[in-house]
Length: 219
Ligand SMILES: C[S@@+](CC[C@H](N)C(=O)[O-])C[C@H]1O[C@@H](n2cnc3c(N)ncnc32)[C@H](O)[C@@H]1O
Image 1 (tube, rainbow, N blue to C red):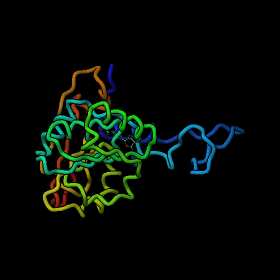
Image 2 (image 1 turned 180 degrees about the horizontal axis):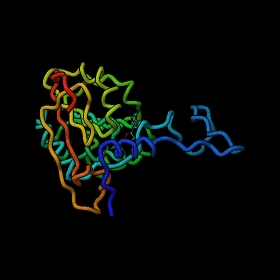
Image 3 (image 1 turned 120 degrees about the horizontal axis):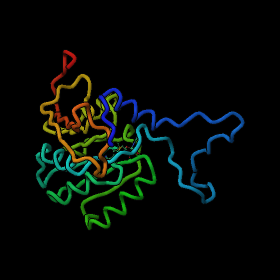
């Protein structure tokens, strides 16, 4: 049976899973990040992801891209791209250029392999990066599946996007910015990424258009 979680429980599940457990007393310290001169070994991220990897179900990806109203001139960035499914789907749907960013080298490797397998290397690039360090002004469509507080942390970067740019977020709002559209998507239980639904068993997609309207009262 899939977990039915309220938004706050859902957030807690993402954060808890992304937070490493404290080391047991007397255990070896955590491995230091790999440096360019480090001997070959397991690939380690330069810093830990702010949120665990959970894929967006394909039906929700499709809804996000529908709500984005893509045209072939658009450039899509997925911030925390996981296996690359959103940028790959955008390229296949409208022939747009797209970049997926992820901090986790394993996800980057997987996403690059998926881009190759989908035959969209001429349109899609996957980069290893911390999304909080990025200049996002090259995009006019941004997709997110992070956490509410991470969306808020991205607001200064997102506010610099060109007027008319669209921001789509799976499951998480962006406190202080009023969405222009909110849609709910019901996904059949048991599918890929079928986790973390709300109390009604739905996934939610939020859409904002830059410049967004400030949200004065709490929803
Ligand atoms: C919930 S998954 C979403 C994956 C994909 N966007 C999707 O919807 O299927 C969040 C992803 O963000 C990545 N991530 C977490 N913190 C990050 C950061 N600061 N910079 C870049 N990527 C990050 C994780 O490695 C993970 O792959």
